[in-house]
Image 1 (tube, helix red, strand yellow):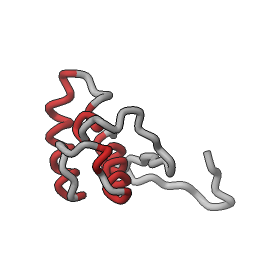
Image 2: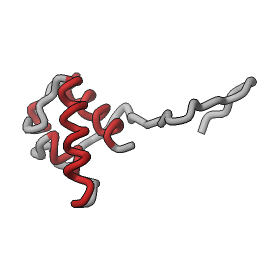
Image 3: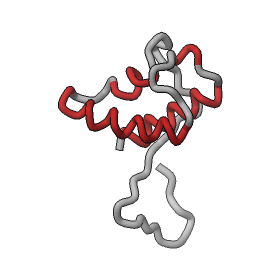
Image 4: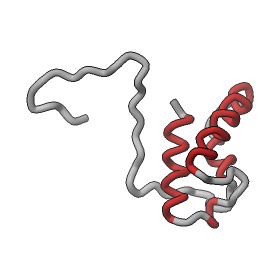
Length: 88
C-alpha cells in the first residue's frame, strides 16, 4: 500500500475503493460477459448482482451476452471496470 508523504487521509462514508489491474488476463475468453462478472457470487446473490450488472453494463455500453473473446480492447477494459463496480 502507498503512504501519503504528508497530510491526512479522509474517506467519505459510503465510498468504496476498488482496484483495476492494468494487465488482467481472463482464463476462459469463451465465457460471456455475464458469466465472467457473476462467476464469483453465490447462487443467492446472483440475481441481485445480475440486476446491478445490467445497470452498469448499460451505462458502459456493453452487452452481457457477448463473448469476451469478441470484445474490443476498450470494451474489455470497461468489462473489467464493471467487475470492480459490481464486486463491492
